[in-house]
Amino acid sequence: GAFASQTLLALAMQSFRQPVVVVAGRRFFSSGSAYDLCIIGGGPGGYVGAIKAAQLGLKVVCVERRGALGGTCLNVGCIPSKSLLHNSALYHQAQHDLKARGINFTSVSMDLDVMMKNKEKSVDQLTKGIEMLFKMNKVTYVKGHGTLTGPNSLSVSLLDGGEEKIEAKNIMLATGSDVVSLPGIELDEKTIVSSTGALKLEKVPEKMTVIGGGVIGLELGSVWARLGSKVTVVEFMDSIGGLGIDAEVAKNFMA
Image (cartoon, rainbow, N blue to C red):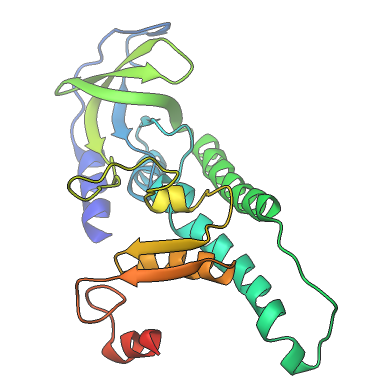
């Protein structure tokens, strides 16, 4: 947003400190090659900030522990859920709508494995696209878990093993969100799942209870209901769709 853009412009206008020599695990930075900006997190805030800062002339490194750029939205949120929503809608339409439109066929079946692979293909194409943007804008991409060790330094536990030290004149935290469970409930991502686990179930459950009737709960509940599960949504509020939803839209959801 505007705040992020102003922050990046402020970073670009800061006077740089004297260059330092940095020993970074198995890599060595000589004088003058320390980063102007290190961003921890490669989601929508992190990768967009990294590209914009590089376009403004900064030397940028982005650290991401997932091993794939794009954050929650691209990897385990908006994009995979929309893929499943679209394909499950086609299956549901074939079962319940096409005959009324004069399209007849003897039977229709669903291959969940193929549906999941289609979802993963969509995600992979988009994450690879962000990596390409990094290369085009000369943003260094480090795969690993970053830990701050000082106001201008961090240590990265690399996904492929080993450790790397990074020093930067400025550090931006863009660590994003994580799943939170309810008190006393342990997620095993098999029987009791978060939204992440609900995106990769190995079979269609006979019954499913969704705790929370917000956008995410309704999306994933719709997917599995279309594929054959008997879904019950439990919501504390007196309407569904989450805070801020239009009252008429929420009413239609309940119909």
